[in-house]
Length: 124
Image 1 (cartoon, one colour):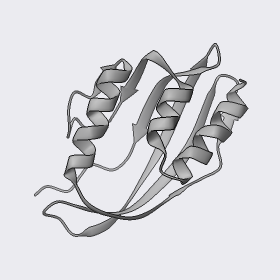
Image 2 (tube, one colour; image 1 turned 135 degrees about the vertical axis):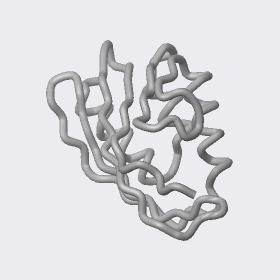
Image 3 (tube, helix red, strand yellow; image 1 turned 90 degrees about the horizontal axis):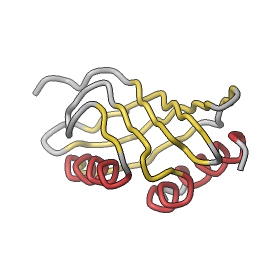
């Protein structure tokens, strides 16, 4: 798959909330994932097991997901970016809209890295 095809497929799956298929189909086994804040684990993790564990910890922080929007991707050679906005309530917190910029690296037809950029979480 080309970077554009991977980007389009990721957007398609994210828009339906099918994160598991996205990871199984599009990510390489030793992919890295980087967050700006280590709210639910190390800032950078490597490997699909660690990425899945990070996702599980994030899910455990969520009280209610009201919806999400995913932009069309912007592709540049072997990278692409998209924005994701979530209407969400974390446990113990108010309902809020979180927005992030998601940047992905691609090599040999698979996502090899993901990095997220967003505002720091409010202090509780």
